[in-house]
Image (cartoon, rainbow, N blue to C red):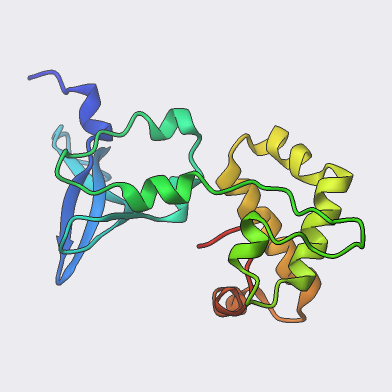
Length: 179
């Protein structure tokens, strides 16, 4: 019996299901049958999707992994990882006030000045002043996960809707998380 290569557990491959392309790893699992065969079955675990130009768009489950865990994955060289790199390096600029207590048009605030950013901006300011973001960062140690927690909390505070509407609401307002 040959020895399995440990890096194969983290090697990304294309898994085609009908017309959809997924970025996946293949992991062995023991067969649940009671027979004595040592045959292994492999399960595809989808970490994101691919388009026809091989642009990798990660799912939140991949983005919630720590940077050390994400670095273990081996991507094919012909895949475009720009979307993944953009999502994993979200900007962390503090909202600021000028002397007249109005929003300074810099960074995130300037980029989203045409959206309804008032309530979210206020909650971001409160989170920075109270140190909530730093506390969450010390617990999760992952910027993407902290942004997701902040987004869910802000959505629940600002609206009376359940989380099924969060994705639609993100089209209207700018939240810390983009997915």
